[in-house]
Image 1 (spheres, rainbow, N blue to C red):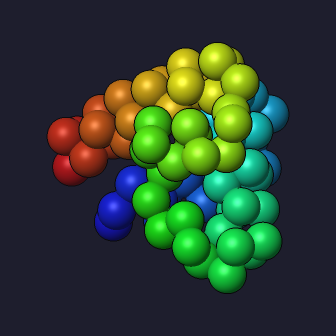
Image 2: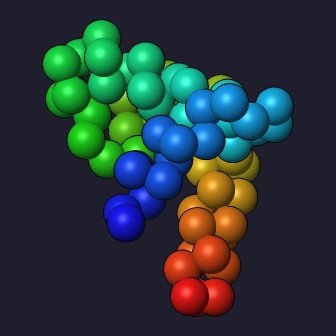
Length: 70
């Protein structure tokens, strides 16, 4: 599973990762999937707040931990 697929599944979370997931899903819908990746470059294009960068880092770390445990 790629990061973006995992992230989309996090939309129901009540934390910063859930907020990021909802924002990413919304951005994909609004741009007709122009944003296929969720990374710092795209956060810059979205004019994201600093908390989004923290959430992205946390989400990436969690995703890596999950994949390393398999």
